[in-house]
Length: 375
Image: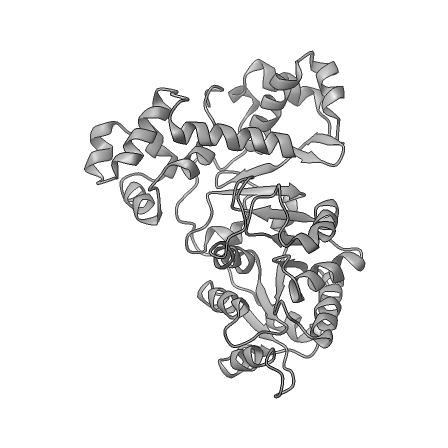
């Protein structure tokens, strides 16, 4: 990749009108979505793509940094560097395999913490933002026990059940993954700022939204498809009949995941959603064993669509001399940027650009204390 250009997968997320329909048109003509960036205007027009896409592709090919899509990608790269946010693209080996199979899988995931955790077997624990004391206790207890039994707890960092599930895993000494509906440079809700810091320190916070993105109501149903997509199954602790948790449960079923629900009092409004799910065939859960028994013969992933071009980690021969110098200076323990600057002789701006490029290619990861080589 030419170092004057932003990363290709990141740029794809900045192209206007490149939604599912346009992506499918590209993939009907070529096996790789990134091939869009090499197409000539005649081919682009023949595919019936909007003029906005044609203009963005031509700007990429001409390295025209003044184009809005190019400028947007540059801003995202800069903000990620400034906030220590990592990017895992579809072509990155760390992109979670289970997530590739969902409808409208994100092209890029933004990460804070340990992105390797996405490869772990996960259980989503979700529920009402206005949970009862019993519901919060259930969320904490199941999160701790399922973590001890080998599953990684994933949730949405929301008030109520989500926050209790994260806290239950963390308090028991285990990692957890939080998927949020805004940029990683801000934590929503604000009441969970400290909890979010614990998640990053011990686990992973991720989002499909670039830094600077505000939390919006429409983002949360979108976020929920990632929570269920990452997981083997979804455990609903408490939920009303019209709650977002039932939307997540429906997405989980569409994605071929297992759905579990904890029953409650027939008089409790936050139990009605769980009872509805159980009537619809969700597994009634009383203990962690109920979850683990059901997941023993989990699904086997089918073929990936679209296929990934360059799915393997790139060889160092594809890097320029500056990036090779940075890679050679890194070890498998975190090193500060000051130490790397001293070892390589690179000024801070060039060093950070090289580190970002190496991270985007899956060769380097950010970690507490600096950066380290990925084995």
